[in-house]
Length: 99
Image (cartoon, rainbow, N blue to C red; front, side, top):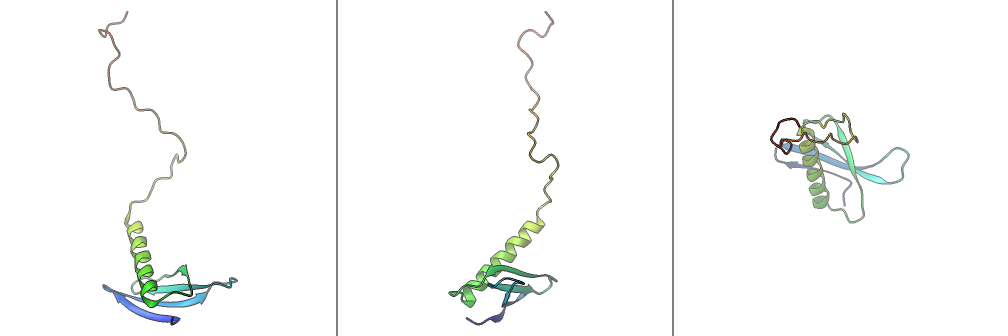
């Protein structure tokens, strides 16, 4: 497996290479995408990696990330607190006059 390659998917160009992370002995697949100023290292390099398998994983990862970014932000207000019980919508039994 080559340690560097590029490919196009739709209107995006991906550039991929293997590089280590600071202070770690493992090698990771890093990639950059045209039109995005960030670079990503989502996968550890493995002996059986092929250009096709890495390409498929990177495209799936990036598409999933774009989908998550497009979702509305979740509210973390009152996280972990139970929701209040819904108000009763049916009138109490009886004729509705006080006893």
